[in-house]
Image 1 (cartoon, helix red, strand yellow):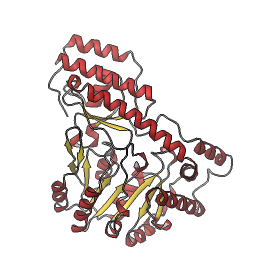
Image 2 (tube, one colour):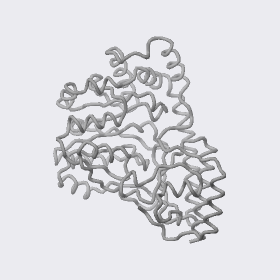
Image 3 (cartoon, one colour):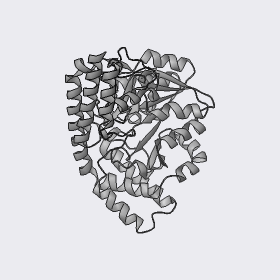
Image 4 (cartoon, one colour):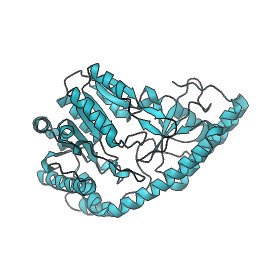
Amino acid sequence: MQIAAGVAGPETAGAATAGAAARQPLGRPLAEMERGCAPAVTRALTDAVATDALRYLAQDDVARLQRVVADWLRERYGWEPSPDAIRPVADLVAGFRAVLTHLLPAGQPIIVPTPGYMPFLSVPQQIGHPVIEVPMLRDGTAGWRYDLPALRAAFEAGARLIVLCNPHNPIGKVATEVELAAIEELVAEFDGIVFADEIHAPLVLGAGEHIVYAARTARAAAHTITATSATKAFNIPGAKCGQLIFTNPEQLAAWRRVGHWHEHQTAVLGVVATTAAYTEGREWLRGTIAELGDTVREAIALLHATATDTGIRVIAPDATYLLWLDLSDTGLIRAGQSAAEAVREAAQIVVTDGSSCGAAGAGSVRFNAALSHADTMEAVRRLVAAATAAKRAA
């Protein structure tokens, strides 16, 4: 737990709390957008419900999903995995759990660079896989980088699978080719596996480029299982349709022996939504990314401009709509209180507490900036005001 250095006096704190309580809470703790979804997706789902799309997943549905995902990957990233290697799962977490359960020796540790997506830390431990957390290194406000010596030490400690979340949830980092090559060298040296979560790949906000890890070299492909989905970029997380892509033939063969019931949990409506998103939703996606980019840039500019007054530290994300806010120097967090509780109390903003993203996240929060533009900026202004007041009172 992060304990703030300064605590507001009782009169100031009481007034701030009373003012915050009078306001409507803003925010979403989950990574989803308050922007609806592409009209083409809505139309396709409406038409599907009127027919026979509430049935179980059939082989024809799987084949259709494989074709449309393969087309998307080829056109978007120049990656051409075999369609048969693209296997449906209900979502990322279900696929991750299945991989750990069936394709990793029991009890073997896994590596998670942190702060990390919450289930990457909790799910392995639920099924007997210890997690070795390797904190990312922060370069001021300039960016994040992997701690390669610490990753090596984790492999030396017995881990063989590393979770490569790229673009990274929750910090929004997009890995460079140099970084991916260095990770590939380590994984190959220790005969490891990469679980590559690339679900946020379409949501690169600036001029950067997402690089598919497994598409880079034959060696990388041979030790990678890639997770992907239309759910984040097209805002259809409830559609329950993700994909695992097996570019190692032996792992694909192993999955074929154990994966049937995991694949069976995929929703037919998810296949419908994914098909419509990838084939007819691209213009909607371009507009959405442009709007998200504008909102994120404006929010970051305000946070940077007021950093001296607030003590809030933030690095502009390369991708996603998630802002990682370090509040450890703000004076907002009192003893016995999480960062998320402090933000809710002081500013009526709903966020994800950073400690659920690993020990490196203590004193930080994950803020979802995919509210409406107005609500996002109002939430940021509330947080700035609350942190400024706490800093002055400290």
